[in-house]
Length: 254
Image (cartoon, rainbow, N blue to C red; front, top):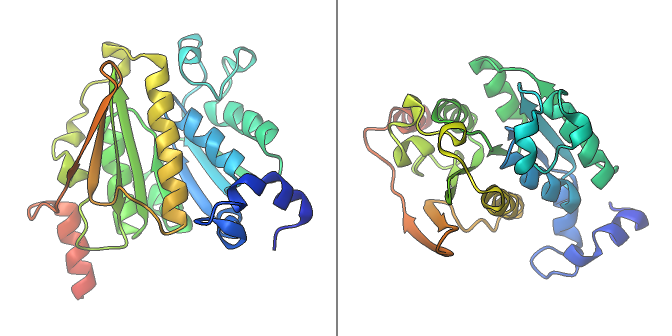
């Protein structure tokens, strides 16, 4: 049960018929795994913390650099040189001291990643390369957890929810079978600062909706163009040749 302090803090969300007191209690009791505390992870974590997600587990192995501050708004000038997870944890605790934040400064092994996914209610992929997205997707699907995934580069971004709870739902590899080849990076191609803010905030919104049972992007991909301010959605079906989904289907028939 929420005490009077938390009821006052989350009053504007509780007033929403789609959330209410019961929904807010769900959020407060939820566990979210966030991987990547850069451009996407910064706004996503700030809004999830503010919204009252009870436990945030932050994972990153990088340190804050001067060039990060252009878009990674959870970090500060004073935290340059610190581990990103520690920098983010300090900021998020200032935003909301009523939540638990676990900071993991490490490059995870597949076994460690799987364990963390199993412990979470939702996995949020805020990484910036195809290698990481492929590994996170496989772990989240194996753990049978929903995965909120976004990517952004230059002026464009994408967002989707891949439902590991449903063996017939598509996964990230169905969307991008070549993801494990790495792909383009912001380091090489550049990125406009508010773009990751836009996609990261939408990640936070979809994460909250997943926790409340109201996700709208399961089986769909949203494409956003910040230069023209246009967006479009398309439906995604499971790839019959996807090795991750094949393993999921076989698991359910064992």
